[in-house]
Length: 163
Image 1 (cartoon, rainbow, N blue to C red):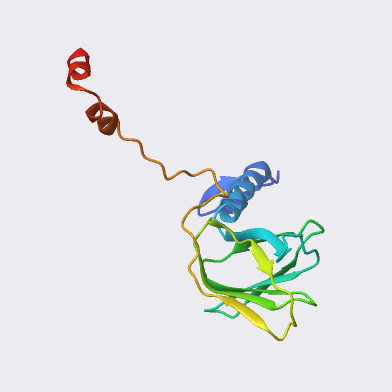
Image 2 (cartoon, rainbow, N blue to C red):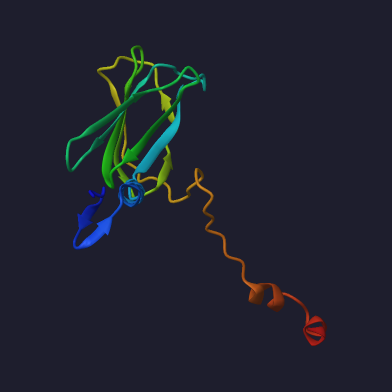
């Protein structure tokens, strides 16, 4: 009698066990992604949204370009970016080309990059070289610390006796 079994380093696995093992292994492999994200809104100098703007993020180390187009509401999101430093470029006919250099992306980091375009020709470029802010408004992580000692020391001496 023939049995449907697979051998894996001496262990005998049934087809169901093998399938379960492959599903778990695949989910663990895909769960290690952890790429960063750049998201924001493209507007003009007056604050009106700019749809169909080409937004590109180029990895400075590898040269790989990740490109998206802003939505009808001016929003864009470039997700699953490998860790590294990027140059973000936005091009729209009738506006100056926007370039932000040295934008560092860490694993699972979300950077909010709202872009205000200036009217002009695409041959003209507005370059932003400032580092990205450390405040992460797109995630639920908080950088607040409250000190109980600060609140206690601000009380008067008679309040301390009641503690």
